[in-house]
Amino acid sequence: MAQTSCLVCCPLVANSVEETVIQMQQAKADGADIIELRLDHLHNFNPNTQLQIILNQRPLPIIVTYRPKWEGGEYEGEEATRLDTLRLALELGADYVDVELQVAPTFIKSISEKKSRNSKIIVSSHNYQSTPSLKELGQLVTRIQDTGADIVKIATTATNITDVNQIFQVQKGLHAQSEMTVPIIALAMSSRGLISRILCPKFGGYLTFGSIGIGKESASGQPTLTDLLKIYKIKSLSRDTKIFGIIGNPVGHSKGPILHNQAFREIGFDGIYVPFLVDDLAQFLTVYSTPDFAGFSVTIPHKEAALQCCDEVEPVAQSIGAVNTIVRRHSDGKLIGYNTDYMGAISAVEDGLKGRLSSGDWENISPLSGRLFVVVGAGGAGKALAYGAKEKGARVAIANRNYERAKTLASLVGGEAIPLEKLDSFCPENGMILANTTSVGMHPNVNETPISKEALKSYDLVFDAVYTPKVTRLLREAEETGATVVSGLEMFIRQAMGQFELFTGCPAPAKLMREIAVRNA
Image (cartoon, rainbow, N blue to C red; front, side, top):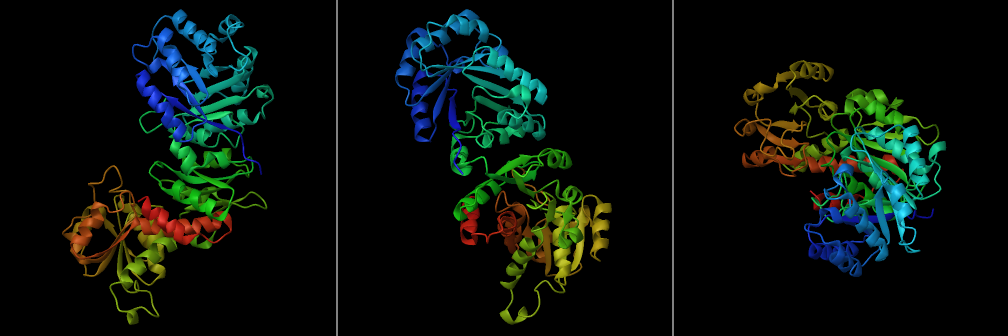
């Protein structure tokens, strides 16, 4: 299928002309198609002398924007001066000028003789509070078109990731009142609107924005230019590209997009994997129910809720009581739930133990058999580890902040429950195995640990499901006491391979996925 023609624009919010010129060259080198010049961020800007300097040195087509405070920008001066500067930009041959809907009708009338044949007017509307209904967005698009705009731009704020669906619908032109006669730029700001920026090419947007670097964004939720082009490869998206992603909250730390997108490309699979910051899983799955959204990884805190949201659940996931993978079945669109955490984590722990034993000790039996396996946490990952350990013949103990949840899970696997505050003193025997399945120790709280260093002396092996950072405080202290340590990165790699095969129906490129995961840990 032919790739889409969506352009990638790099907005520049430099404070000086000199810095702007440098950043323009960097944007070109990084792969941008267009530059947006945010004049309102320039300090002591003199349009009569400095605008020509910038335009003369532009290496790419340029959008000139002079955003006022009342539309979310930085400019606080006279409105007449601002509009005169935009007219001057047209006279000097700017490729695009962005003007706000509020002033667009009179501005466009005033430039009939100043606008060159090749210049285009973007008429924009920004909503920093919410995303209106699809009907309201359709009416807004019509109002913008009626001004005589060459390009329509609407930017809303996503308070929920489901808001982005309205943006996709407007881009696709499916709503009667928003049928496109001119190109449209439609984006949702905020971290919950990120997918509107990444998936823009698939749904027919004219362009999307990528910042020149972290901390240099022109709007909330803006990804970097490098991420758009290198991780997501949005230039290769087509209308037929299948969408996958990781559902969680938080989700920004996930290495899943780096791993899966490169693996998709390795086997020539037309798919993209994105982060979904989800508050309500059931609502999300209801809204994004088309075949375009083909599969999902599920992480904290939605693994148990996912069990109830699937049409069918494989027996292992049902027994564990948690789903970490959802696939939309091609034949009927039903959501099928799986759990790849189970074998990913247990096989990693088994391999870690094998390194402590002679080969004859585990040829016919799991090295977990008969061991006391202590699981910290009673959520989705905790259930997977507890279930897996039991299946391998281990005796299981559950430590959890909520003791009632610990008792519930312990009863399901025939184990015992431990109040989390008593974990340090729990030492019925030496040579135990510890598996932390909570988020304790995850970035940015890297100094936290669920158990004291002294208590770790009773364990032969310590596993930590946290993989950001790769070496947590728990693993570092465990290694110092002489225990074998297994990083959550190993579980992540193995469960991701299982997910990849469920998503694509193809064998995972194991060597590549391992190299990528280790390199980006």
